[in-house]
Image 1 (cartoon, rainbow, N blue to C red):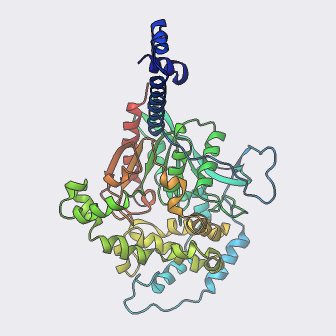
Image 2 (image 1 turned 120 degrees about the vertical axis):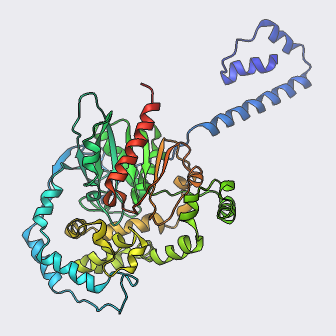
Image 3 (image 1 turned 60 degrees about the vertical axis):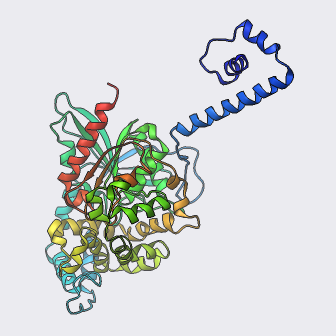
Length: 489
């Protein structure tokens, strides 16, 4: 005991009383053999305690740095934040009309509906509306309703909207970044923004919605290798440039991965993480056991009845359906530029490629409908506005490249550091019933260590903010309320 006390006091800086003279004398009376045994034992115990302390410590992934313009990175960056206004020349609009007029359509198969992709008969209707009724000038005014900005980070002009709240007396303003995915854009959030920036509760949000580099009005990387990790780092730099030190983050699709990476890189900056697409799996053996047992005895593996309803039949919902819906991903993760050439040249082809996802990913049953169910949740004006953001910026190819940079690189995506690192920030999960893959809470715990809320949403699919803004906003508010109530005053 005397040896351990002396050793821990001088080496491990443990908060114990200093060793007394009696302790030192007791050590000096030991023979050398016993002294060596005590020394080895104490060092071993000390090492074990240090290891356990390290295991408990929140782990991060490296932040890193990057430069995505041609040439070498300069010694200093321009940190200016510049106002930006969405505008389109008449020349671009006339070129669009000419290309729509020259579209070559293929006749649909009898009773093909959306099972072969976008139904040609309905595509003709969309193209006609786009050419004759869609008012882009009006939609540009809608886009410019909120303040747009650009700032140069790591050599790229990064676009974002910054919506300040209508603050009522006594309300706390909380910064929130919302990140879109593919084939969406910042415009997905326009219906939810009023619900977050004009509230009557104890808090209200100040919202920043950036465009992922290579999407919409954000400049595309000029070098290979730009992944979700790089987007996460750039978005942290953006928030720092806006003078935010801690903030909430929210995302779905690629936005889910990017915000998870943000939480892994700088957890000290994240007040809370809210996701509407949940990527997590228990260990392979545990997953197999869960799937074998869960359908019949769900309580034994932590499944709820709702989990069972959403997961099974497993092969049908999680294998066959994913194979039917993931062909685009294999193309974009391998040869994005090849397929992208046609999409960048044909506006109607681009619309078919993008809008088919807004049909099927909203509800797989939409494949049984002649119009793909598109106008059940969305208006053609909203859908075509999103398409126009891709068309007028020529960003479809760089947006597709994001798949190759993340999934098609030489390194195994699932062994990437962020995929083997847990997430320790307060987390809220919204599980929408028509999301492509369902993740039970018991599986989510394998990746997210501090789940404050997990909600089975009553309706909605992949594009939550676009489809069900009120439901998503409500879930975000209750999650943030839980987090804020536990924070030190």
